[in-house]
Image (cartoon, rainbow, N blue to C red; front, side, top):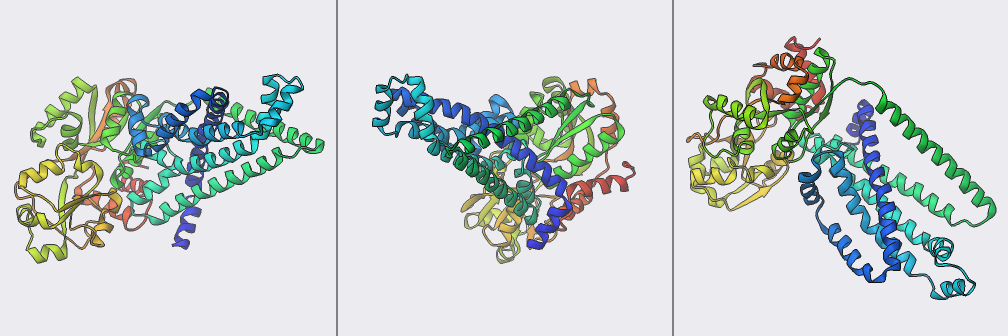
Length: 514
């Protein structure tokens, strides 16, 4: 494993460096805002003592909300992406900042304050020259803890498409690439330790009181201010520079979606003058991407017909491809989006059972499974249990009642099945690991699961502004079979190949990419 981690880190150093830069940017913004807002809040409640308890109670309450829940609460208001991630990080960073500032300012020896007042100092002078300097060690300790925690927590930002090293962690889990997950986790830890070390140096220097030290501190502050100013100037220059129009492509947290996202990026950037901003692995899949498409946060994403029918259009009646025209018309009229570029493969759901369990009970079909379901455990990714065409509808159709259910990430299902943590699980028919799994695929003898042909959903406004996109996306019609997709997934999940390389190679084989 260490050798694999090192090789991957060297081979994809540019990619990891980019993610680390995104990670630091998100963390730095949240830390800076939390220092200002939390510091001011702590200062105010140290003076208005009646407001201290309710303020700390509110901040404490916000801190107890699980990070996934916090993101879910914020998405309806601020959408997916960087803004929501930064807001969530700021909220979590406020508690240690407010508490340390309040504690530092209120735990100063009262005799010192009384002596200052007796010498004629104003409250403002006491705050600037006595309270804040004496409280600084406690405040700096809070800042160090808050900064370390924020950098670690920023990994969750990738769940809503905000970037950072969480992308490597989450993609590694999804694609069965443990080296990628470990590299991402290690880099997060290194960033946190480096920031903690730097803040420790700052803390120690701030406590030095000699004239020479104060002079050195002022010089250091000037250098830091100059560096920050230079970075801001560079950022402004880049933002003001003319750039190509950008198409924002999103994908779900699935191996094949990573591959298709990179196919779209390669083709669009080759055949047009457009730039592609690719956001891979948006947590929650359709439930988060579809609203983001409606609000204009994303322009294109690969979707499945059966999923669109049930989850986006909220239709409970059965779907088959004979109703594709009805599906596309509804998208066009109600959502102002079009389906362009139907890949050709059908990634429908399937049910597999551990081979030992299937042999023991003689299971070959879903109806066979219904006879013994009460003795077995069922596992699936989180959204399957909430889909209109998911767990409850499936159990009702076949009269099943499992002994217990297990929610887990899509990238961990096969490992959990192999380890015997569950007996039955839902799969996708194009899963790369399916052919190598020690499992029996059951027959859907009542045809419960609908068709899930894959195609691209595009906002009509984008097609109107960039009509050249339609020709590019149409090239993808019928280019991928079920077997092709399963093979590409296998290369990523079992052979450890990057989705970018697999996507590029396949397009070249099909003559679509030079």
